[in-house]
Image (cartoon, one colour):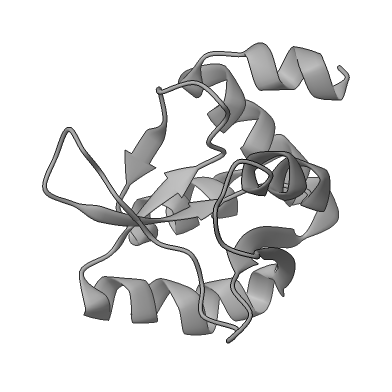
Length: 121
């Protein structure tokens, strides 16, 4: 499956692709600003904030191109994501937005649920 095909999948399809790609590469990608602060998004539909995550840097660059901020892709290796990021996100009350695209649908979930799903792959 190529970039455009994956980008066109619905949120469930992108979630499945995310799990497969992350299980293979053992890394998660996020966006950070010039101060190395990670991008978090306030959901318009719900009163939640989430950290958007992608399975590859190419998808982060595509997503960041519409931003008014200068954002760059940052790789987080899976062991660090499990030991540092998951507990930190939960402690801050943040959810995880898995593999957003240019559309409006996104799979938002508890960090511990994402960890459990990745461990099951």
